[in-house]
Amino acid sequence: MPEREERGVIAEAVRSVGRSGRLTAPKVRRAIIEGEARFSARLEEHYVLVTSVSARHFEGMSAEELGGATFAFDRFVPEPFGSQHEEARRNSEQHVLGRLPRPGITMRSYTGVRVSVSGRSQEEAKERALDSLDLLRGMWNLGINRNIGDRTSVGMRTSNNMVSLGPVHSLHHPDGQLVGRPWLETDYAGPVISYRIGRDWGYVKEYEEWVREELGRIPYRRDLEAVIRSYARALDRRDWDTSFVRLWAVLEALTDTGRVPYEMTEKRTLSLVKEKDTPYHRQILKHLTRYRNRTVHAGHETLAIQTLLFQLKFYVERLLEFHLSADPTFGSFEEAARFLDPPKDLAALRKRTQRR
Image (cartoon, rainbow, N blue to C red; front, top):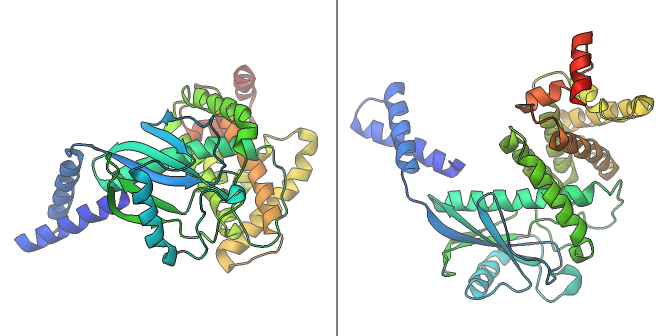
């Protein structure tokens, strides 16, 4: 259930119990359960989300399906969706910090995306559509980003993803009619130079197919898909310190160390590097850990943040590929992450050798 729907169910439960008499916890709990049941019983309706991504369109970008959503990529969004989305864009211009990307400006042309989904409410349709699109972008960006070891940017900060999400999203009925108000990416500050994805399309699609195939055999697929989305969303951010903190959360999820000392995060991450390189990577990870703590607890910032972000990105991407390639008998992040711990006895070492 989307967060907004959850808040609505809880608020209505409190109001209804309050109107009927004295508020008690059991009564409110029952009212919440009844509200959840009513939401679950709703019939699903079809919707189309219209948005864009920072990649230049080319004819080979054909429609595809992922997670119950169908994507169509357009140089110009077709009617009747085009004019309705354009109206949403015009109404949004005064609420963004920078100018919006315009079709036809080659270097900064975003590709229009239509995502067809079903949902029991508008909020659920929005959430499903963006989740599916961000999962697809996560696959694409992981394949592309893993080959980029460092980057030094000048001028206005931009996303560190090659395929980032556009600034304006609108929801439509299947006939193209706009549904409700559009919504915006909160840190959008202007169009970026769009990625010429057509040059690498063969590789991008091959990598996407590999990720899809690996996800299909993993028992904790839904959890791993959520982390891939978080990876894409973290590198979308133009505030690189925010991006760093969010990417660190991805590192903790992949090592299953969100509730344990940082030393365990470092140890499990180091198990993926060559033994002769371990001292070097240990120093980098200790430095990244210190910066993460100073940023979270004291708001510390550094001019070298992009370098630190790309160092962290390296470890996150190696861990993502570890999970995608891991033994299919691992039933959860916890079990897979324990495999990264140094063996403590002969039996554990033999089991690890068999799994390798």
